[in-house]
Image (cartoon, rainbow, N blue to C red; front, top):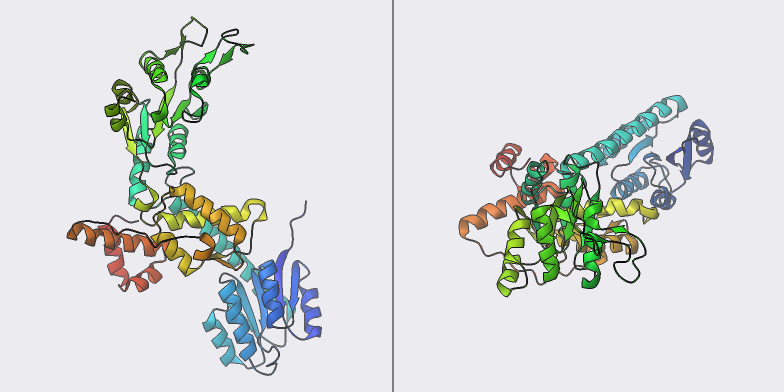
Length: 452
């Protein structure tokens, strides 16, 4: 299969030059626009990475005001596009002005196709390199563990713990609110362990009726009950040599807690209706959003089981506790949903009010709520940027944190640093400017708070 042609937009009002440039760039899919309105329409529809722009456009064909206005609008809609302005002979002043506005390069008429082709090819190459670099940077900064997007100190600490214990067989308990990514971290434990090539088996203890839970976990023999027409292995046995993830373990009924405790102590199971003890080698990871010590006090959770499943306990912070991660995740979700089924590919990012709303909102539903909000916004957004209105965020009921004075100062300083670095994609110059400090001061503050 041949690769699709690269898009090149030519903004030129002279029909003769339009034909000449279309012929000269036969290797490109050339889009032609004769005025500002047509150029912006083509830009919104096709998003060409490289554009040649004649500054002498109607209604100011003899000047440059319309061309410069078109350039500003193009760059506001597509800031990464490479715009090559074409000026009249000896029109150095407007060429310099265009470069100051953000144009990539300029070329003076009369047009020599072979020279203009060199400039266009180089612009496309630079665009491709910058795009790839942004992808690599986002991947490097935002992925402390496979499949996990985070940059906050709170989640970095969790990720380091996961890395340290992954090689062990210690039964691990993941604690956190719903939607914080407990299963994702359980999978990371599996993927980083020596069991990675074996099965990762997950079961939600709250989603299976109590009457079916035993046979689901331990399996059953043929004839064990009505409808048991054949021998069937359970989730525990199917995870042999791999990892078993028991989500919402706090919802296990008392009878099942006893059976699970015996398995964890003896590492053998008996299928329902069977008498044979079957040894199983499996790493067990449990998770719950409930307060297990409180359940123990209520008599609804066994204390001995609690100590058995919590050889290592890891508390996963809520999204509102993760400095800067909400914006990082929102950007990743936006790119992901744009790629799925071609959803609203014209979106270029978030508006300033949306980024402020994402940072300020408390996210009671955590990462799952954020993911759902972004998915809906990608589908419903009309403009080039997702707005706070598209996200349907209500930030009126946020409550301020109550800390002592020193803690308030340190927390606010670190939060501002993390937020600014996230909002400006770790651009040191822009971050220092928005924070009102010099670059050396910014580096000192980053070192002070352990921000890479």
